[in-house]
Image (cartoon, each protein chain N blue to C red):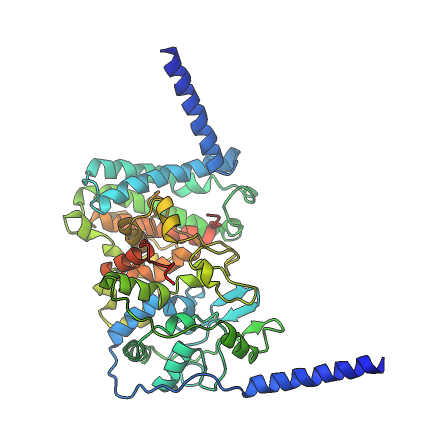
Length: 300
Length: 198
């Protein structure tokens, strides 16, 4: 009995030490973004593409643009999207561009805390410094809303935020994509959009028990999405099997209309409404070209 | 002669089996509304090819298609969703009944929009040359990226839930513009009220 108690105590000490060292483990890299002029219009376009507006605007309940408060129920608990307006207390008005960059591309808050990957920063890590400067310029134009978004409601053990550092070490694969010289400009643009800002894989790639995307099943479709729905596979083989072409896929991302005459519902209805319907014809075509190419999403 | 009849009957039989399978074994009112949706879907498929300039624009076909949708919209649509007709194999979410006002507002919106499309049929496409016109009303391309205001824009004005449209105003619009508004209306309703089963 005493031995078991001792073991228990030892385990508790080790767990505490582990937790303490996770607390102390610094993450993220410094960034230098001095003197890059940002283009707010281009940034607003990227924000559309990235879903910032869709996820951080509680349109359903008449919330102000980017003031947050959208609920995202998951297996790990319920997330609430934060306020991204220029309010200095409740929003990001007090941030520097460096802090913004670290948050968006590295998933690390100004306090050095890791964000939950419900925020798709692994995708946003593909952004260039210029993209970040443009986004930041756009976010600086958002009117302040003095409204605090609700606290995250995560279940234990997921509520222990420092554990995310271990998650990051295990699963995180970030950074810009090196352009493929053997591929067209449109293909490279499509790859950037799909694997970057548009974060298609956030819903179309199945996740493991810890919520990390399974690279070997990239874009194979997934079940148990936050809205309770399923996402279809969007690999070349499956898309072709279901009658998709570059032309009708680009059109569907603009209009929501599928080749069969159905109109998207579920999360994809929102993605089109708040995101892809605003993209240029060239960008929609680039997405379709990449997805339907033999070296598309299955590239190593 | 006879053999053709048999083949014909076989084909019809097979088609109905396929149809039943496609509708997940639905019967009664659930089957009826799935078929009504299928009818509208056929119209959308045919007209979208025209709106994109893949097939030649035909004002009569647009008018006919719009009329078909109109006949299936509004109360004709909501009448197919009596209380208690949800659950397997239906794809209707419980929200249809818990949020009936919004559901029926969207159905009414579809009725007005399809009436408007019929009236706008003679206006043709926005650019007058097919392909270029696609997505005009959907805020595609430079329009929405032209200014930083986009960041404050929220959702597109056309998506106003249960918003009221005036058929007379729609009648003055390019047909593809009204058609895209119909698609937005379909999508708004599917997003809210349809279970995605794929």
